[in-house]
Amino acid sequence: MKYARFGLIAALAAAMPLMSLAAEKTLIFQNGLNGYEGTEDTYVMSSERDANRNFENNSGGAKYEFEWDGSDGGGRNFALMKFKDIFGDGPNQIPPGAQIVNAYVETTVSNAGSSNQSSKIYDLLVEWSQETATFDSVFPGLNDVEDPLIGEQVSETSVQVFHNPSNAGQAWKGEITPLVQEWSDGLANNGFVIVPSLESTNGFGHYSSETPLSKPVTRLTVDTSAGVFSFEEGVDGYEGVRDAWIGSNAERFYTNYGERQSIEIDRNADDNVSLGLLRFDDIVGDGPNQIPSGATVNSAQVSLWVQDGGRLVYVNEILPFSAEVLGVMVNTYFDESSVTYENFVEDGVYPKYGVEIAEAPVTDFIPAAFSQVDFDVTSSVKKWVAGQAPNYGWLLEPTTGDLVSFSASEGSESFGPPKLVVTFIAETGVNDYMMY
Image (cartoon, rainbow, N blue to C red; front, side):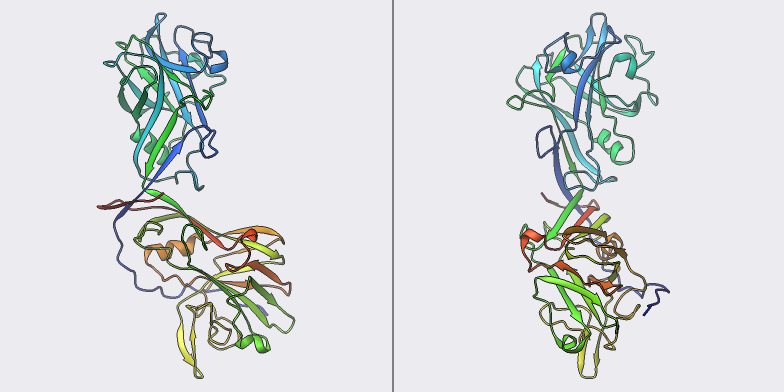
């Protein structure tokens, strides 16, 4: 049997008032920490324009050191730093478009400078690699006293930093919030250049990212108004997964399958079906492990562990519906401990598009046995977080007679219970809380 998918999505529930919140998440990017290995740092010299001073070629100084200097051998030394792969949808990345609340680069001083000296830091518009960077390859045509060219080699935005503390072994920190914001807003992350003033004639040395981990290394710390939350039963105190399956055939019509270890979906030749139900409760709110109402959702993905594979599966958003039908209270906000086909489907035949489920599927996927399947539910979660619709979850609809089953929240942890991962950007405002 074919089921029409046409028309507009049914009228949405009245919008809830938006709340002004600033959720802050602190991320630290440092080689060797939490699997991160994206730091590059080196320096280039206008007095030796074709020299590469990456740590393995650094005959001009200590091997694990980079520096900036306003006067060295008749020229200037610029430091180059880059923290790659810091933006994205991963749990240890900054969502693109996030507001950068604070960002600073930190090193450990290896060679004392003068505390009354200063430098400017610019975002680089030129691609470079620490293995090949030279003064002429990054700043061609620049003479010994010129700053990098605005709009060609560096962006217009800059920050001033001072060389203190300046003693060897001390931590040095430079605040670069507007530069990281440029990357979040879409500027290519080519890292940044530290340009010493002409008056900064005492070289300022720092341990590089290649320094053995027993010694200090460089890092970038970013506080963002963005978050990546993972909702999984029993993880970090979350207990909101609701999953079940319902069947239209014979005794299944009246039977609850909400506490089984698997979610089963199927369709046989007589068009009897088993449908999967899945909902993640309490994902929006004011708590430290909830998405703030009104946040901008960048992405939302559900992951399921497939036990038995099959053919194409539709993912349908469940709509609010409640009515008494022949003495039975039908309610699509299902209780996994009591839901049946009888009390979920209004006419007992099949969920109607525009009644129990939306006019068109959110997405679809083809599962493979003994593997994880991921599917995108961003459109649903966006509406729930914006207050445009209540969260009733999703219905998993089979398209063929091949049995498909997924590990449920009651299933073995080794088979991966359902998980929802949401990347979002919170609105800024007066009510702040920290989330980690």
